[in-house]
Length: 124
Length: 323
Image 1 (cartoon, chains in turn yellow, green):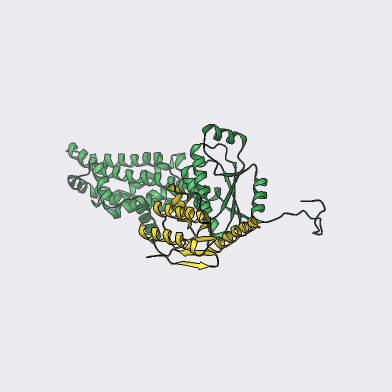
Image 2: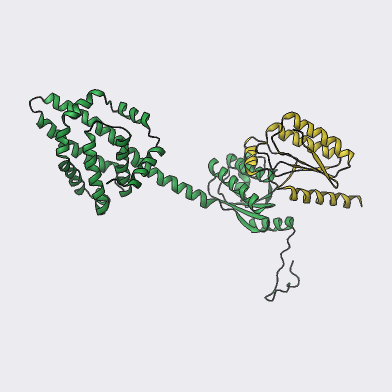
């Protein structure tokens, strides 16, 4: 099942609703890489609230989405990691290093807005 | 006659202890109980059944001579119940049916002993006295054929050892139950997660951290982050006397897990000894955000969350010059 990417202002939002195959994850990565440039987005939010497992491939793909987005000028936030998922991830040694995280979508939007604001200050 | 609550209690302890039909058969095998024993026990069935009252009295008379048995004898209600169960026990011992029902009765009596605080050694002494009396009577009955009498008695003794096995297990199990409950209580008490301000949690860690406790701390912290929508967590380790590589790893895991949920963790209270030993061990702690003491950590947390603490006079007016 492909994940739809929603555009909200200068932020792209993808909410993952079910466990994804590796192919779906790669598709999501490619879609983000494409759209981030097309819409000149400043931020990406990936919502994983509905997921009860994040394996090493998913973690690595999320990380590469974040790096790709950064190279194209957008910041990435992963939101909604469940307590059990977080605990399982650290047990497996997966720490999503270099990727910002937030409690839920609301927090993620606030985080992205804060970073965008800093960016504008820098230009001025 | 049998209290339904009691019955279900011994059934549940039977389950907790993992006693089932297969393990009962195994226990019989362990004491060497065979089909031939059933016939021998049947030969002394009447003798024991008729004198069950006497033997019960022997058991309790012996106990009444021992200071150690006082807790059991002190309460009249418990004593009466124990007497009744003991007599049922003696009768059941020679009935030839040692299945689930029989074990349940043993467990009921055993948990009664456990509640009364009777030590296994005291119970064993009295039980041996009782067996001795039965032994004498059995030998008297088959005076003409002492070998047969001895064999009959030894068959009964197998049942007795089968019983002892169960009783000792339940006494140990009950004692361990208390320990388990206390461990649970200590664990609950020792990992409070406190909300200091809106979106700011304090996690004071005190004492020794082992793998189990680290897991418990992490889980309760993650739950609290979700429940309180926390953004910053101050983890204070002033109460942790020593940190080795294992504990440091646990703390790092907790911090990483909290970060995955979008919370920023500040570690405070690393004493100079702890800091030195961590550096000496070469543990990579660059991923930790550390502040010297709890006060500093809370100030840092306030700064991140955008709070400003202002000193005021009694009427609430900001004191001039205060930060």
